[in-house]
Image (tube, rainbow, N blue to C red):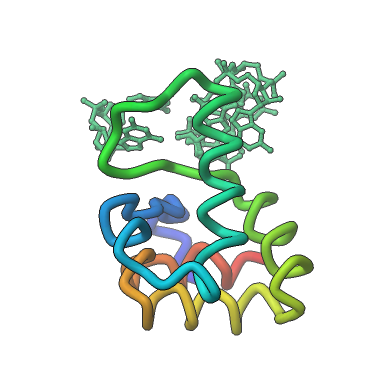
Length: 89
Ligand code: C2E
Ligand code: C2E
Ligand code: C2E
């Protein structure tokens, strides 16, 4: 990781998430909905999540954080910048 660049945020694209089939995206959708409810943050098109939450999601999806990040990028719910966020794990 470059010391000159800040760690990018993990930003979930909620519109894209809502278009995905439930069998894939269900656990992520429920997790994001829980965070929105805890924050009272319902009107966003995107949701910034904690790095720590990606670890929890990786356990839920039975993958490593790096593998799960690749999957979320392939679904279009995270952008490619998210790879750098996971390098610091
Ligand atoms: P908490 O962790 O005790 O955080 C209390 C408040 O501190 C949050 O209220 C928020 O105003 C601020 N805060 C804590 N960490 C951050 C941060 O990294 N960035 C920013 N911008 N603010 C931060 P809020 O947002 O109403 O959240 C209430 C509670 O909901 C939090 O209490 C936490 O238990 C839960 N929560 C909210 N968002 C998340 C999340 O993304 N992940 C997890 N694991 N829990 C969350
Ligand atoms: P940013 O982090 O690049 O976010 C850009 C815009 O994406 C935000 O504009 C907001 O419209 C959307 N966004 C990002 N994450 C979330 C989210 O978790 N929920 C929702 N509802 N929208 C989200 P906005 O709100 O005008 O903020 C502009 C900039 O102000 C942000 O750029 C960030 O640099 C700063 N900012 C806003 N709120 C916070 C915060 O809670 N913590 C920190 N550290 N910076 C914040
Ligand atoms: P952010 O608000 O720009 O915060 C960037 C990082 O600063 C966070 O990364 C965390 O390491 C640290 N940080 C900020 N505020 C607090 C705090 O109150 N307590 C502690 N212990 N650390 C804090 P992290 O955790 O990966 O979160 C990434 C982004 O997710 C945050 O960017 C914010 O946009 C969002 N977020 C995380 N937790 C909360 C929360 O509880 N409420 C809200 N509204 N947003 C949150």
